Length: 404
Image 1 (cartoon, rainbow, N blue to C red):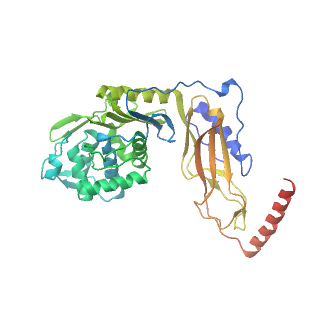
Image 2: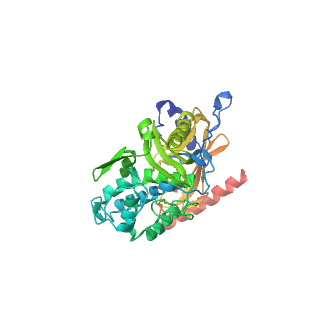
Image 3: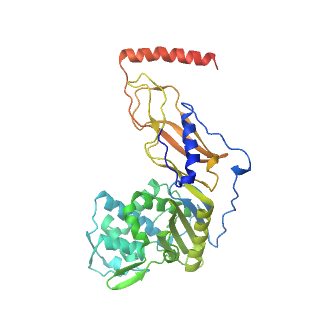
């Protein structure tokens, strides 16, 4: 079985032990849990922030490391534009639009209040410029222009935003417009915005570099990115600020250090400086006390259970995507893994079919679950092969029952 590297060489041994334990028995495997005082490390409680709601999430594993009112519905202000930009990026990747496509600027887009990119009525502006205007300087005018171009208007575009929010699991989000301008039916949560940010980073990484740009110039007007952490912390490379009177000062940020990427969402602080400082507290806590381990590569074979009645006797079982786990520092040795594979696997079995689950624990806490999939198709064997397997399975089950 292929053993994958941990994020640092000193972590290789516990991950190797985890992988070897999975091979120990054919269906269920569990690593032994270490005993004694070295099995524990001391981690303080997460920081308390001067904010209405916040969350800290590992971008690779999805594990939440700190939270406060993460599902409280709040006005997201310009954090809304994360979804607006995500949909533009999705259309670019699908080939439905191109970066140099020219977007006409309507009077409605030009008149939209709040932060602006300063486009003019009747202009033809490239999609790539409008996307930068949305992300870097939070242009309401650019957001409306793109909404009209993609969906024919801000209302239909909001419908598309809500459909994608549902698809991404943003259960407590509802959009009314692409800008975040106030509306009582326009709301989101810290958890939902963290989920959306994770998709922005993972789904369209080729566009993510836009979020770290510190300045944007259009029509001779240079404007700074309002995310102050881009200047203060070299590990921070996104994502978006927001402010309205009702929402307060908000910030969704992401940072990467030593192959560990964190996403923080802070909503409802009292000033631009406060949202930067409170975000820095969250990120510092996560990087100081946690680490992310890469356990398996996409397609890693974790087991080869017996298959009955097939053209092959064994099935390669594994995972269809990379598996990351986020754990407190110096507790990697407490990781235990258990494979629960369906009993009496019988052909035919389709490639990609779920045949079990893997559960990873840190001590008594479940820190991850993943489906176990067939990594290949197993077709039915010939008549005599199926007959022989039926006889063999009968005696195998019989003898197994006698010795239980």
